[in-house]
Length: 371
Image (cartoon, rainbow, N blue to C red):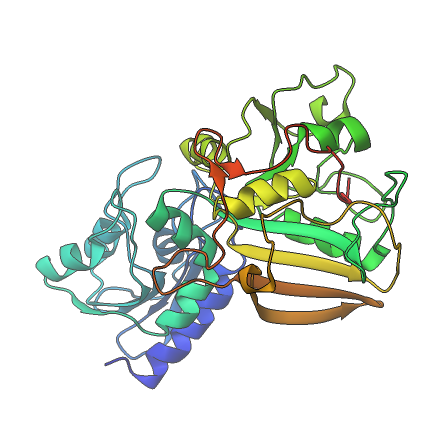
């Protein structure tokens, strides 16, 4: 059982882990090294692919004796040799006597560190503040466990559910505070996904920018889905961030292609047709809705036809958070799952395309995009 000192060290390790970049191929991990007396002698975190892992970072920064001490780490130490060596072996070589672990690592290429440590004679305590450790990396863990990226569908709309006016205009439905929040969250993703209809109608930039419109920090991959060619002068093709054009309308093909590129979190920001396709395919894990206190009365809805013909077939969402952003309301929710683990709503789908049954030429209307 973990001591109060070790639990406190785990909380501190979690705060360090959160400093690491979100949205990359690797998880956010923090580590605190305690000496024999329980004093903190080293702290560290993982700063992204190719950099030292949290355990190695903490050992390198240790300002005291680590031999015979305890390593408190938010994720099970890895056994994998890639761009860096295995953390489990680094702890063994440093003479650490005990390791306290938050969450287990489900990655088959890196898992098994706890067993390696025990085999080397170290005392290992697992699942300390496991819920907190899992929550920190919930999207990354989902991607590793399921083999596909975690998908957040973001949309902006009015109180009457419109994402654009009757003439197709949508800038700006929501306020500056909501758009800034979108950019902050977009920065924590691996890829921003829109359809060709949105690119043609709205010419979005799809980068992460500051209040003055300047690109900042790490830019997620820009992904355009659909068979239509992207105009040569489209802003999404500039050199501000990498862009990938996937000539498919099948959400499963999109996610498979992004998983192969080690994208762990997808930010779905296209129009109603693309949103409906992902929802019908059961490929939306989280919904982030920015609702403006405004009415349009006509225009495009936030999502296309889901095949719902009766209130009994409504797609239910479980709300997990509500916040007010200068008058706009941000709602975080996730689709309700049936006992089978599948999405409760069942729609007729095209087996070949993996999209909801819809008219042969659905309207390509963009949702509001924080360009």
